[in-house]
Amino acid sequence: MKVHIHVSLKSGVLDPQGRAIHHELEALGFSGVNDVRAGKLIELDVADDTSDDDLDQMCRKLLANMVIENYRIEKLETA
Image 1: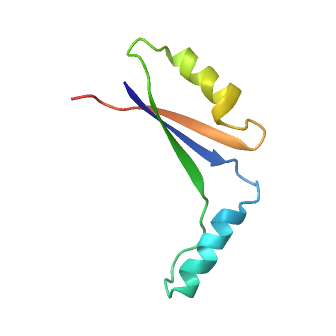
Image 2 (image 1 turned 135 degrees about the vertical axis):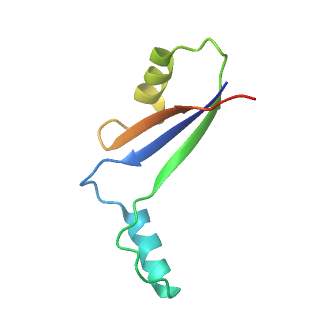
């Protein structure tokens, strides 16, 4: 089973990467971008019987820094 883990900075946490992207978009002439928040996507390929609790623990123990980041787990449909 494929699982996507979306990790993003919590609201109010300074995001220098997002700020740099925003600055460069403006430098390239793109207007109308009000704000940029950067994050990361982690793709896991796990056994089909991996529990939601195990996925949650993976995020809390390793994949996300719970002090400054949020995460969202997305299980992908398999064909």
